[in-house]
Image (cartoon, rainbow, N blue to C red; front, side, top):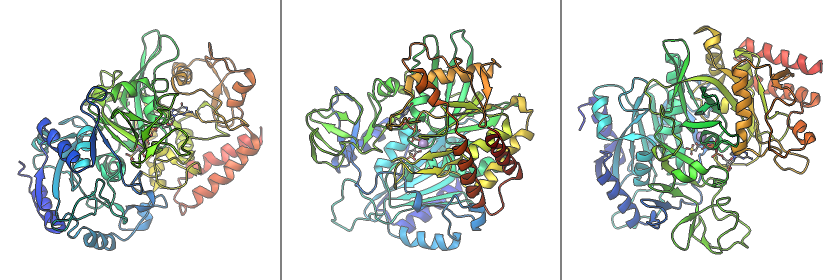
Length: 594
Ligand code: GTP
Ligand code: SPV
Ligand code: MN
C-alpha cells in the first residue's frame, strides 16, 4: 500500500462522500483480473466469449442511452469562462463542486469502491504521469487494466509525488437487497475537469472516454493544461514509424478527429511493396523536446479502444490480429457460437445474431446489428506491428505532423503547409464531419482544430498561441513539417473517391519524399500539392479525371471557407493571435488571385 498522504486522505474523503460498502485497492495482478471478470459475468455485465474463438475475452452491452462520449455534458471549470474558452462548457468551479458533491453523496451505496493507480506512459519513465481513478464500476477497472499500466508498481513509483485524482461513479447506488442491472448508469451525466487542482469528476456514464479517466480526461484535457505550463504538447494523435524500401525510417504523428481513421492509419498494412508501417500509438501523443532540439513523442496508453464497425481483415488486418484474445467487446453483435460480429467484419452477414441491444437480429432488419460506436478494448502488446520503440521512455523523433478530417469536398487528398506558422494556422481551421464517437448529430461539418475541439483543456486561442510558440523554442528546421490529408472526399454520387486504408501508403510515400526535399510538388492556395504524376498510383485503377477530382481546389469554396473561418475566429473574443489572422488574409489573397 501507499504512504502518500494526499492519496490516503483523498480516498478516505471520497469514501465518506460516496458511502461504498467496500474499498478495494487494485494491485493490477492477473488473479485480480480473473476475479473481476468472473464477477462481471456473474452480475450479467459480461458474457464470456467462446474460448476457442476469442480466448480470454468478454462481451458487454451498454444501456442504449450510454454509448458514446457526451460532449454537451463535459466541462472544464477554470475560475473564469474566458480561461475555458468557447471550446469548453463552463460553470463556476465552486458552483460545479456543489452540484457534484450532491450527486456523489451516497452514489456508491451497496457497491465496492475500486482505487486504480495508473501510469500514463511506461512506469517510471520521466515523461510518464500518474493518476488514480476511484470508480464503482468493475467494467471500468478491467478496461483500465488493458488501456493503462495499473497497480502496485505504480504506487511504488508514485511515492509522495503528484497524481491526478479522478473520481468516477456510474450514479446507480443499490439499496439493501436491490438487484443490480447489467449496465448501471444515470440519466444525469457530468464529466468535469478542475484545472486548479487538476482533478476529474465523472458521474453517470460507464462508457469509454466518459469513464476511463486516463484517456481523454487526463491524457488530453488535463495533460494539455500541464503541457502548456511545462512547454510540451499533449495531442489527439496516432504515432507511426514508416520505413522506405531503402530502409530509411521516419516517425509521423497524425491528428484526425474521433472515428476518422487514426487506428486504421496507426496499423496500416502497406499496399506498396517495400514500404512498412509500425505502430507506436493510435490515439494520443505526448511530444516533448529532446536534447537535440527535435520533438519526441510517446504513446501514454497501453491498449487500444478502437471502433469495431468497419474493421476487417481487408481494412485493418493488424487490428483483427490484435483483438483475437484477451479483449473486451462492447456494443458489437453476438453470434450463435458466442463470437463477435460487426458491420464490415465480413462481406456476408451472419444469418442470425443477437444485436447490441440484446435482441434477435437477422440480415433483413433495417438497422445495424452493432452500434456505430461499438468498440474493442485490446492490449497494444498483442499488435503484430508494434514498433520496437513503442515503449521507449525517451519517445520517438517526429519528422512530420499530419492533420486530417472528414471533408466530402474542398480539401484535397494531401497537401503540405508552407511553414510552421502556416501549419499551425491550417491546424487551427481544420473542420470535419461529426461521427458516432460523440452523442449527437452525425455528418455535420464543424470546426475541430487539431482534432482537439472536445479535448483541449483551456481556451483554444491560447492553445493556438502555444503551438505558434514552438517556432521560438527551437530552430524551425528541427520542427516536424506539417501536412494535411483527406481520405473522405466524395464524388457526385456521394461515394468516396479515394480507396483509403492500405492504399493510404501512397500518400505517406509522397509525404516521405517531401521530407527528403524531393521536387514533387506545385503550389496551390492551400499549400504544396503533388505535382501531377508524382503521387504513386501504380496498380491502382483510378481514372485520371477521378484522380484530378481528388486535388480539385475551388476558388468559390476557398472564399466561402475564408468567411467561415473569420466567423469562427470571431467567437474567441479577440484572443486569436495576430499571426493567424494574417495567415487567414494571406489565404484569402491566394484564392482571390486564382
Ligand atoms: P477514435 O478511436 O474515435 O479516436 O477513432 P479513430 O480516429 O481511431 O478512427 P478509426 O481508425 O477507428 O476509423 C473509424 C472509421 O473510419 C472506421 O469505420 C473506418 O472503417 C473508417 N476509416 C478509417 N480509415 C479510412 C480510410 O482510409 N478511408 C475510409 N473511407 N474510411 C476509413
Ligand atoms: C474518441 O472519441 O476520440 C475516442 C473514443 O478515442 S473515447 O475513448 O470514448 O473518447
Ligand atoms: Mn480518439
